[in-house]
Length: 447
Length: 145
Ligand SMILES: [Zn+2]
Image (cartoon, rainbow over all chains, first blue to last red; front, side):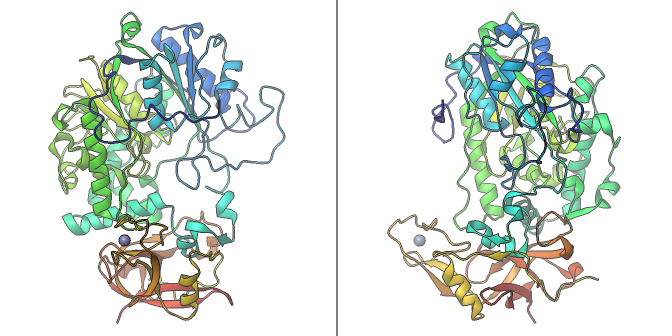
């Protein structure tokens, strides 16, 4: 199958409440260890081996046999590339190994074919699309596949690879001529668009609403690290890089004095590329009732992106409007209002995204220009405003799974030391760079 | 206190195409031109193929001279040595300049002759030009006196 299935996408206003709201549930999750990168030697730590491990842990969590899985969604893009989210299509020149490691599949990349051939018991998969988007939209695709009967028990797999060597080497970054859109950035050697736009928003934000970069982002980054470290031993290796490898905490002063990257952004404003695989199991609400875990119901999903600017560059007002459009769509599709959202785990590849997402969704009543006030208070999981309780990618490394795992655990009531003290019945979580609309809404009850 | 008086030699040169040639031709003559919709008069940078302001597919787009004056909309200092051709230049400053012709009309360049610790949002700046090769001249900005 080579055609891209897009009919399932919910990418515009006016679609009303998702017709399958509460009829699909997430019933299991599993996570491999989170390493900095593969060591090139240990065959039990390749991305493929980690994929198999994540699947086994996910099925164990759900109490489901591999034979019962009939849907498999695997995003084949495992590297962050020049465009920020897609594979950079480069890799080391190296000799390969005996099968199944006789190509890049299984070493640094994943697909349904490799995983079905190498995961014990995974032999009844009937739905395995080749074109699978990154985890933000992959979540919606999996939910929709179950909802519309393409499969009954769907495994979602998302891996992240991190090659050694200069970050984002190869491809366009090796070219000494800047073609197309790059002629407007590369001659001045500007940062990638996402990072640049984040810097643009935050400086304009401070100019418009007051406060400094450090006052706005420092407490958020510290909170992300704190939450990322709040793990229990029964959780697979802490499902995050820092919980396993340290450092064992980050203070505001350490954040302020950290290594400059794209000053005023510091190293801790950026997520750390990692090597890991996460797995999630989706099934119908009806089947979910008799499974091992308390089901976490899917109440809505969205995809696509805001058309965010009138001119060719995005400015603060565009970013605010774009995110407001996304939030409106997510609320429309779930039937929720801001006050209905207990757990909020937005995307944080750069810390700069978080204040704007917080304000757009008006979580805990926070409106434009007010994120800076919320973060001055207690945003820890112990307090009244447990913002981004999972710690995201800044607190766990670039796994892009933390927002989802935390939301599931909070709704199940199994987050342990990270369990929020306030109500945890609904959650909104995302892997949504820029003004992407890839959000999913979850609840511990189907109605 | 650190600053750049030049960003030359340039490790990465633009490859003008049919669509963008007028911009680079003008830069060679030390003129800054920006694409403008001839129907709704909205400026675009980087240039577009269809005006995203009036969305009229019949509207023509043409490059027009601008003053070269603007203010710093955002700034950063690039310390990360991840971009080919610029490894030896880090740290170097980058600014998004809002050109005075239109709100939100941003152009991203480096800033010359400005100590990094004096970079401020709202700082008045003006265009200068640096010859990068026989074919290519690169627009840059510096603080306005
Ligand atoms: Zn126009």
